[in-house]
Image 1 (cartoon, rainbow, N blue to C red):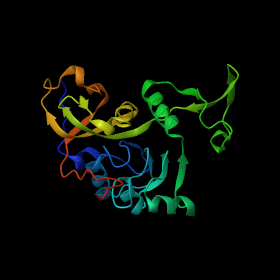
Image 2 (cartoon, helix red, strand yellow):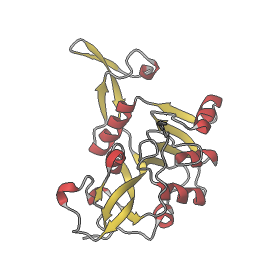
Image 3 (cartoon, rainbow, N blue to C red):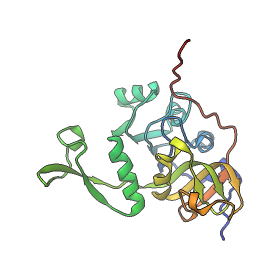
Image 4 (spheres, rainbow, N blue to C red):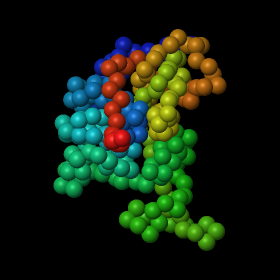
Length: 232
């Protein structure tokens, strides 16, 4: 069985070139590949296209890459709590494709499944439909949407083994598993790395065949995007 373990985040992202298309897993601030993002900051790679549900916040997640102007284009569904993302979008400094969240998820899933296009009702009659083919099925209009694929997919899992099998936890399971299938090279960072054969096969969410590099991360912050408290 192939051992896919690399020394760490620096080694995992070392060959990501300028202009690469990246899928970056996570939902809000949950399940984001924190170590890989920090390593990309150090490499100085630029002109990146990032496909991600959102861009974290100003000082965390993809937001840090936006601050250093390493990202040329964002393909996402949500500006979120990131003021720098909003500022660059409104000023025209950043190319942005905003996509309905369900459509974004399905386009990524289609990329991983080898399905080049599909029809969806989301966005009909809005700016989302501009320039896209529309067909009628059972009396209802649908847009033709194309798959999304990436040069590299950066994902974060709770647990993985040396063969690349991954288990995600909670909300981190939203975008990470489908992104793991849609990258030419998938890099996984995990909280716990175990020898091959230790994971229960019935609990594995992403099989190792989809993962090319894996390492155990450290110093995870696991921030909360918005904290709401109630005073008694």
